[in-house]
Image 1 (cartoon, one colour):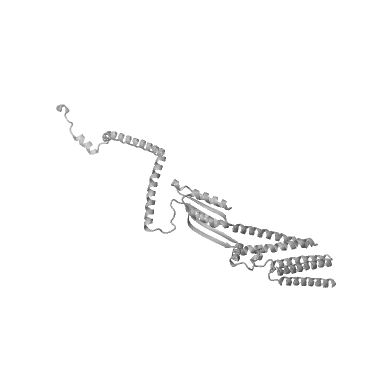
Image 2: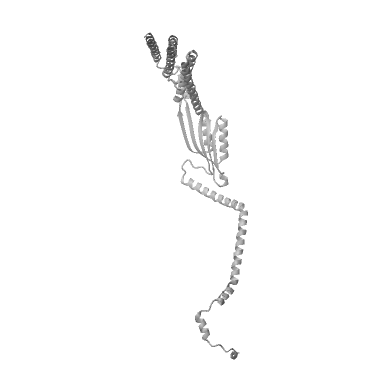
Length: 385
């Protein structure tokens, strides 16, 4: 009966301390409620494990004392956090962007333009640009893009080329480039592209990830503080169950911290280096970006057709000269075939009458003509002679 009463008393004492701790944490609205709640829950679980271990091992008093010390430390830490938040004018996890990003608060005499510029600089913007361009100097444009990207400190993430040179008259070349350009140099890069090529399509997208970035930073800070507190508890833990529970929680925190750091690095790369997708098309004449007048269209059409006729003659001459060996072989074969056919026709013409006479002699006599020849009297050859 005494053991049961002692058990109930210790449990009520622990519950009272935990309630006081939660109430102290809730006094500061700007504090990190989620971080403290998870930490208190973990501490209470470790304390209860220690307490149950002590009860089963008939060592209740030391385990209960350890649980009470642990909860007392938690309450003191919560009070210290509340005091620190009150003195600094806000918690470390305040939703204000200056507290989250570590940026100092603007001074009282700062102008609105200066604060707006500072706020814009603190924002995390991911900029993406899509370009479709035409060029009559394909190789020079590719070289210029690579040189500019290398000079400004960017890099080419992907490059694809296809087709043949338009000067060969057998098609044209295409290129697809993905360039990562520093955010401060994007406008200068677009100006260079406008000067060296004909931009037929342009699309730009800006994504603001400031809230996502600050939220990840806040979670990372909360987990870092929780990790430090758990290491301190792990050094003081004297039961196997408490050590296992704390190590499991520390392993989860390490995994979460690595994941948050990876997300922050990805955001930093996308913010610092804007992505520019470029589709390049090699053409002989630029596509007009503005509608032309009737006379201008007639002039351009006449010039284009005249140029096509000249190119056609040139292409035919090049084809004829380059194909002379093949044409000579075909001419020789055709001449041989013509001579053979002519000889056959001549031979058939010479033998035609002889074959007809011989066929007529060898043909059988009809029955009526044979009977008439038998009835006719024989002619007197002697008298005639």
